[in-house]
Amino acid sequence: MYIKYKKPVAINCWASVAGKKEGEGPLADKFDETVADDYFGKDTWEKAETELQSRCIGHLLHKKVIDAQDIDVVLGGDLTNQITSTSFAMRNFARPFVGLYNACSTMAEALLMGACLVDGGFADNALCLASSHFCTAERQFRTPLDYGGKRTPTAQWTVTGCGSVLLESAGQNAFITSAQIGRVVDLGVTDANNMGAAMAPAAADTIKRFLQESGTKAQEYDVIYTGDLGKVGSILLWQLLEKEKIVLSNHTDCGNVIFGEKQNVQSGASGCGCGATVLAADILPKIMAGELNNILFVATGALLSPSTTMQGESIPCIAHLVNIKSKKEVQKK
Amino acid sequence: MNYVWAFVVGGLICVAGQLLIDLTKLTPARILVIFVVSGVVLSAIGVWEKLVDFAGAGATVPILGFGHILAQGVEKAVAQSGFVGIFTGGMTACSGGVTASLMFALIASALTKSKSQS
Amino acid sequence: MRTNKKQYDRMVKGASPKSKVAKNCVWAFVVGGSFCVLGQILTEVYAEYMHFSLGDARQLASITLVGLSALLTAAGWYNRLARRAGAGTLVPITGFANAVVSPAIEFSTEGFVTGVASRMFVIAGPVIVYGTLASVAYGVILYVRARFGI
Image 1 (cartoon, one colour):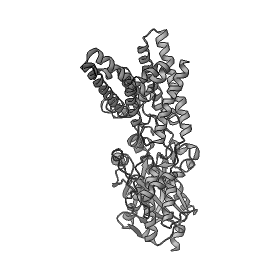
Image 2 (cartoon, one colour; image 1 turned 180 degrees about the vertical axis):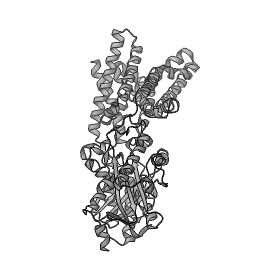
Image 3 (cartoon, rainbow over the protein chains, first blue to last red; image 1 turned 30 degrees about the vertical axis):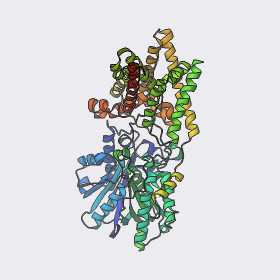
Image 4 (cartoon, chains in turn yellow, purple, brown; image 1 turned 60 degrees about the vertical axis):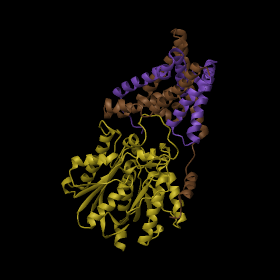
């Protein structure tokens, strides 16, 4: 479903917090905070991820200089069962909350839903956030952390990080002008260690439909960002779109920028926190600085559970897209 | 020479496991099950005992050796106590390793917590 | 979309990098072989210097390796080694111990009864189940042969 907002929804403020390994990567000095202790001073991984979210919200409120009470609504989610990391962070935050789950596409989902609430006049602002934590994801979806196993070459590394973005009805830094709600796509990939391959068709489907319905061409955008396809998924996305006669020469995957070549992450990064932190630490600052004027942010999610994988099911995936423009680009039209 | 053969034979058994991981879609858990059952079979047809004589720990340390212990246990128990031995032999023979594992696991879980890999 | 599942399966195979089989096998050989040498040394120490029977010495060597693996797992070193060694850390008895110890540590946050104890054999359980059942099948054969002289 294509959404054209009546009036561009403003993004004035954002924040990101990341873990140790992310803090050793290329984006190290762009996060608002990197935390060397992956436990974040807590005694369980789940509490650590809740703390990660709380800190990220804290940074955003501090930068924007507003009180929590002035936030109208929060939309967000994470990868833990029943999205407890987010819900538990909201227990202390006590603002109206919409919990979302579309796996790693949650950040784009939150942005497009939040923009609907703001554009519709139901909220003056909406706080959108998503997080993931390597350790909560690993123990839930794979094996215990101390279990000795070799990662396959197609495996991706779940990002420990949280990104948050505040949407408002008016502003000047960046604007969401349109969006595409994705469809669930499944081309039969069953290997849970090859998420990029599973998700690439969903990204291709959403990008293709958005370009069709908005009447634009891929080359019109400065960069088309995908959330966490990694190296394998990116190659497959190019190939899939090539068959649809769409040439993707301006594509960057967030999963390929957050870690360096020598960080031993096989096919790249993944997780809700991957797209969310890269958006808040790298993409939005570039739009504010005028380096980028018109981008697509396409976050992809693999909608599997450990049970469905063991039952031999293939992996259904989804991709949501938001079009973010600079002030200059918005005024042009 | 004991050490050389232990190294070579044990190493080759691990290479067989690695080839199963890399070249088939079998998960590590399934490979271990295949290995332990193979150990019982190879022991039953008398192959494994010969390999143990030849390579020592090279044949007893890999998980196939666990199958060999189970098979030896059931042989002994059936010879000694007949029908009941079918049920008691395997578990009795492997009880040392299993009990040690669960005891050390409990101690480890009390003393440390899980660690991030980053 | 113009791509069907069959075509996509081929594309995925083409785009996915293969495991470095030769390198992995060298690692598995060296690390797995080393655990076996250690087992051999321990067996000989127990048998010759501490005068255990050969059978008991082998059991004790295995138990010692299990303890060593628990120590390495608790220190966070076993999975570091396993990341390179693959089957070299999976196939020896130390791999079995790691499969028991790691979930015990992981789920200690869920309590000693409902976490540690109930999850302890979540990975290694199948080895015990199918290993034991294989021994039962072998036991039936042995019993029938002894009983009926076949």
